[in-house]
Image 1 (cartoon, rainbow, N blue to C red):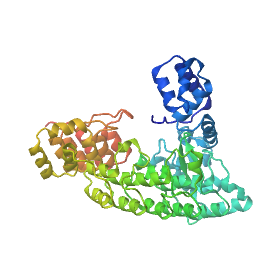
Image 2: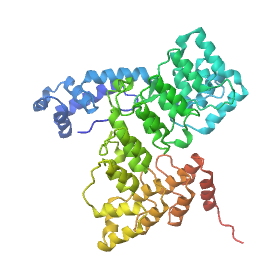
Image 3: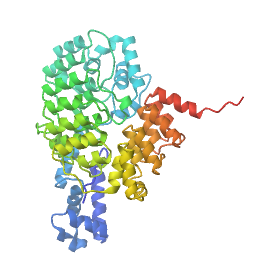
Image 4: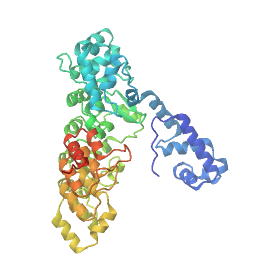
Length: 499
């Protein structure tokens, strides 16, 4: 039985209520509740007399549903959550134009992973340029700006400030430094030098917080940046330099959130650096202990990079991960996005032939032959000759392929392959198919003018709105600041002026 995921900012009273509900349902003999009990309780026979099912048994069963060995272990985890949980995006949302200027500088200038916007960071940089004295207001502004003289002076008075939580997000100075995206050309502003000053004074290189009580965002995570909204979540302007300083000081390279956030950018620089410092091997970092190993073992995190390489067509990533010891058949943390596939299966399905060859040479196990998957793989690679040969041998393959994986045309868009999109559309795949979004939204967000034009030509509807943000492809392009696509989509929506 798969484990449940704890809700954001999990609360003990809420979980106690869930346990009481489970107890009542078991006592009432509800089949699914009894099945859960039998699957997870170490003594399944307690279900033989539901009327005597104790609350302690319900709590143990619930804890195991959430992946914990006992109710006591779950409670210990909640104590960690209480200590480290932060929701900086909610603080940033409450930004008051009349707020203290130093506080406003930090709220505007830091990544918060919820409503991030390059325009906010630009406002912070403008605020600093107009009022340069703000940098020296306190240790948190000095760290965010990278003000060397101010940091040196503050630490000279009190070295304990290096680990002092405070500022609008209740962070340590290293976190403000790592998550800051404030730009400054002052020769006194040198974030790597300030990182060294803080660490030399005793700052914890593992400094971090739990975003919404669940996800570990460390200083290393902040320096490397990236994320699902990559256009508004850039890396630090000294990303690799600050990351190396943190790693030299002992930061754990097995940083689950940093790895996740950077998977949306093909640049392998961060991966090379993390592997240099031991990604894939246990470095004794505290966050895995604090989180009950709920974010993957080091070996699994390395294997995840191989899965990303396979699905996103990144041969260099594959070589790096394999050289570091990744299992070519490893499924890592089994993130649902990979659909339970091995890296080789994922690479073949997406037509990523070079990555597939690298994995096969490393010992990956090929799956049994499947004509439908062979056709899809040929289409994803834009290989019309192979596709035509397969269809000639079995004319029903096209319909079978559409029925099995209607979202394949979205995957071809993600891989930015107009030839594959055309080939799939010719076989009957719908260019307006919905996954998390549809192909035109994806191409617009990526700023791929060729693909946008191709999709429009094939019948993509530019008025479609996604379900999460209720935005058109034009809205997605505007959010990502893809000016060329914005102009193209606006021109398609302008009324025709008749002579």
